[in-house]
Length: 521
View 1 (cartoon, rainbow, N blue to C red):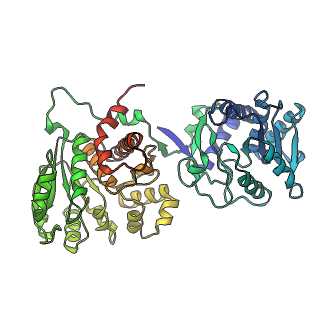
View 2 (cartoon, rainbow, N blue to C red):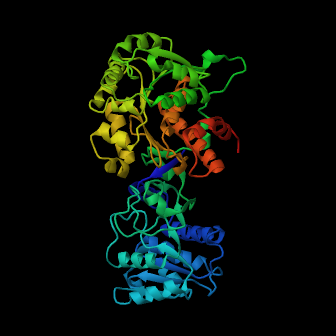
């Protein structure tokens, strides 16, 4: 897994490297600037552009920009790129001041910009074919203001190809929020580690391709940082998937009961059941309203059905609780919610499962979550670990907050709910965040807009349940399941395009997703 840092954590890594290990800041700055220049030479969208303009702020990000300009000698048609500094060279300090002096001594033209000569910026933008954004680094917070804001607004008018140094100026790297004017880059080169804003929207859409450059931060500099946020990688999934022994049988891979389905929503429970099987579970049974059982018998071939008492109009009734509890004594995992519906009797049934303290891992999604929205503390009554898979609307109902707040701080929301209720949260979104008690969280890098279709979440529920049945720990099952789900969606999108993927297409490619993560590099 790769760490994802906050701006403060990144500052501490910097300080530990410079003060604790004795590596000068100028060495890091030189390495950073040269890494950006090398990326510009190699990136397809910038490699052929020969009239770069470097925009520098007065901080260390601007210092990186001075190095980029010097390192691009020979790439620029005029020898060196031109630099526009938002301020005066004699206002710079520290490493940035040193790099500015070196650039000037090399003969690089530096235009000192202020509010009175903004027309010079327009003239330079009209003449260039690429801009290097070294205005604000990842440590800047809040909306840009003053001269920097005016520069970004002017840049937006001309819409050149932009390469961002560390982060696009105007994007808050601790959240991915864009509170004011912001740069939109085709390429962002960051240093050492990704930051939160590189992964979360809307900031993520401003970054373009993100490259993480190794500029010499030693592992020891990270040892004092209590980093609990990571991006998972294929190897993390591969190492957690169980080995299928040659002498094994279906009982070795667990039994899942999927409880759900209602009038108009039979497909949700069907897809969850099938996904659990395709993800590797040995046996799957769908507990469904008895009046709809013929529908499920027709739809399901590999999974079995458990007809349960219903309300007479296609919803599970509370009186079916005892039958489910008896059946669960032979099960390994319960998945609750796909297509469950919101009938009052069904809500009582779902809450009854919790109060019965079912001592199995439980995955809860969709209307299963809505059943607990009024009293989320009821989730704590389950006797086994609970994994919930809400989308932002369901998460907002569970938290008693707004969808906007959930979307603006998904890591914080998921962590706090996981901690306060002792559950694992797989908060779906672009990207999905999996959080568990203790503050640990994983960002899922797979998936895309092609998956924004009804039923996609039901497939995820089934995958996680199938992995739990095979013995994965709940936190591991949640992030591995999210990764495989997203990868299956990506495979489907690659074949069918971003518009035409449906949930069944994702389901049909789970096996290929598992095969892909099991491929050795």
